[in-house]
Length: 256
Image 1 (cartoon, rainbow, N blue to C red):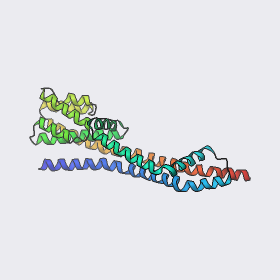
Image 2 (cartoon, helix red, strand yellow):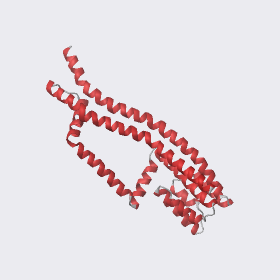
Image 3 (cartoon, rainbow, N blue to C red):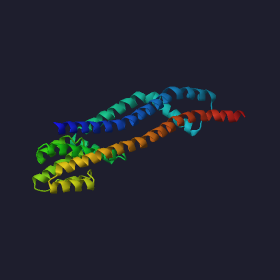
Image 4 (cartoon, helix red, strand yellow):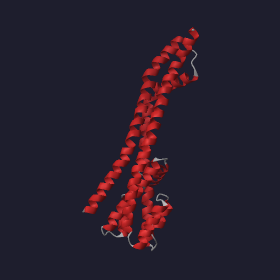
């Protein structure tokens, strides 16, 4: 019971870290999209009417923003429906075996985020299998349970290949190495644990180490995404505002 309590606590903490790392960038992204939509949909048309009445020769940035605003005025609901349809299509595709494998592979290759997901997958795998083995569950059954809780199809397939490898009399480490998810150090430590008969202890040590690595990866992800999102917001919103004021500057210069 104590092992199970520790496992559940660690697993829950890991899930909270991953979700927490994604909250801020998602909120910032939603804010950027909402602000941009409101500017293009409600504010820019006011300027467009003013520019049309004045008969000004508009600079290129202003014409681009006005074109985007006109597109949004006419096709906003189609755009919203298109996004909803795309999200639905991706979700349905993800439910297929091929779709889940492809999307999970792409997620692991994302810069920074992929590193975080890979480290969390290693931590979850080693923590789950280590807890099961130390509780007396056979390695074959433990691997099958661990595969079901992997949360990533690439990791799931690697674990099931390891199970097949053990059933054939080979080692657990080689299929893990071939998956590309597990770092060489982890594979080597698992191999040592297999050979010395201390696999459960070795898995627990790896899990503890990668819990700290996940903490570091979450901090790195947040520190990188925060300034990027602020810069993106400044460029998008600031660019729209500047584009709307450029014709006014031309008017002032013409008067002088």
